[in-house]
Length: 111
Image (tube, rainbow, N blue to C red; front, side, top):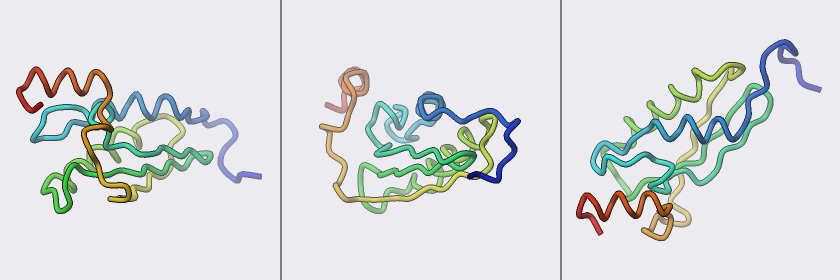
């Protein structure tokens, strides 16, 4: 049984994904959801864990993307803690792009 305040609103995973669409890769100018950088969202009561990746190992935007992701999720009602884990297994590829992300990259001339 959880010890968090039962009056706090439940955090919905779908809402977390929706908020993450506000976080943009500063170089590609595409949100991290459509870019395929979000591998998983886990909600456990008031705690949210994000499993994220980057387009390249050593990407200079890691700190900026992580801080922005934490901020938008932390702002959701009912969220008390946000943990971000980074992974490169499996490595990001263009196959992770959503259809919208692929269209945006084509529009911007990246594909």
